[in-house]
Length: 165
Image (cartoon, rainbow, N blue to C red):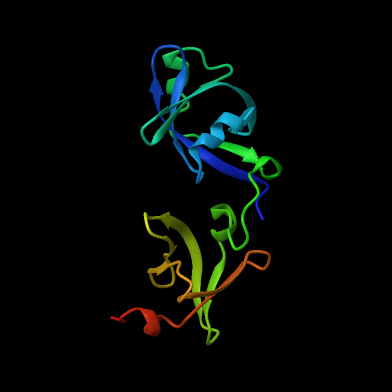
């Protein structure tokens, strides 16, 4: 399991004093109120201020004091050590732990590794790119077991929940 978890992606600058606009990669964007620091490129930086704007978070980070400096951080990730992460509810998982898991069906067929997790309004979707692209809705009636310790996820056979080509 990863020791570092992504909590946001810097997508733009905000204002002239070095604030950055962040897409939160956490279920609760208000979580930023509790963060004392984040890691950017592995460097610990204190959070000096947080504001909220629609689906974005505006963050003032120590050491970024101008729009020119903030510009250099576009498309970088804000991360935290796992020990600072919010504890999860039972049967909940960090996306970082799901990515890279191998998906098998209940017949033992290897369907490939999870490339990414797409978050939708109703449910998450596991995205496998190889050997064949597959989008798996994360629903109780499809996903039968998640074992992040062993990087293994079991689902019902594809033909039972999706029309095959």
